[in-house]
Length: 320
Image 1 (cartoon, rainbow, N blue to C red):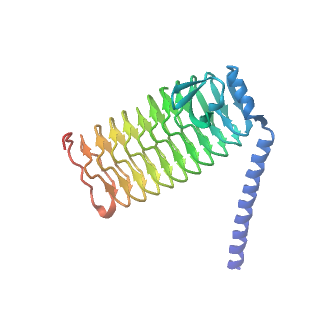
Image 2 (cartoon, rainbow, N blue to C red):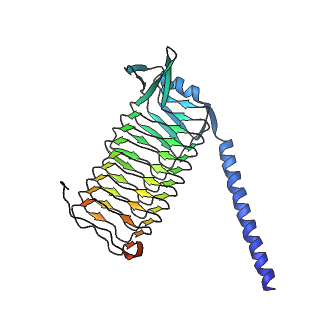
Image 3 (cartoon, helix red, strand yellow):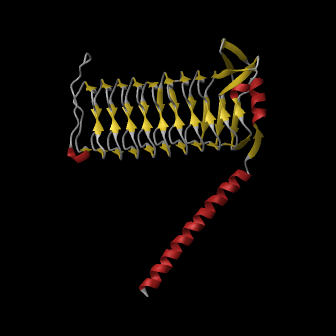
């Protein structure tokens, strides 16, 4: 009798899970069925006319290439710049094709790179990118925001420049590789609650304040050679693979409280000008602080290191 009830309970759990999955799939399909479809080329036409781009609950078909607009000049003998004068605002939209701000133009049978400059605010809020996203080398004169957006394929924001004071990227999800190498933010970057299913690289970024609390990274997370001029907050993060914070300069307070590092964490040769708080964090595979320098003694209350070994926290010496 006991075995019978256990089997029945197991069947009921499986049935409930199946019903939930079917309900969620049905709800998603019904939502997309009520969304209006637009061709990407029509959006480019609106930009060419200087119109504000505002789409909510829309499906964008085909590839959307911001570098393919008419307003273009030759920034150098080896590069063109495409100028987007419009405010860009997408909310709860699905992009079926690629979304690009980096392309090429053929001159004398040679492909010349085209970078995109956005004069106004750029916002993709709660959007679903089904294919690749590439805004490499783009310039954002006001700010760039991707709150709650999902990247199904590879996403590249390498060497972007954002002049805006606030750049909101909280609750983003990346199912594939996410890259933001060499990016420059003149203001702050908020990536709180970001979820990276594979490797994520922010190597060499330059930013004022960086907030990545509640970060989840299933792959490697690379912040090496970066400059954080203000505070760096990475509380309650969960990192399942290697994390590199090496060769960095942390200009302000650095909080890594209550975080879990399943594999190694590197801080080799990094400079910490402000207070470093590692309280309640768990470095299961150790913490490498070789040749790193600390202006203040880090806080390590209830911090767990591999085999209870405490890494070296040398005093600050700029000439060492």
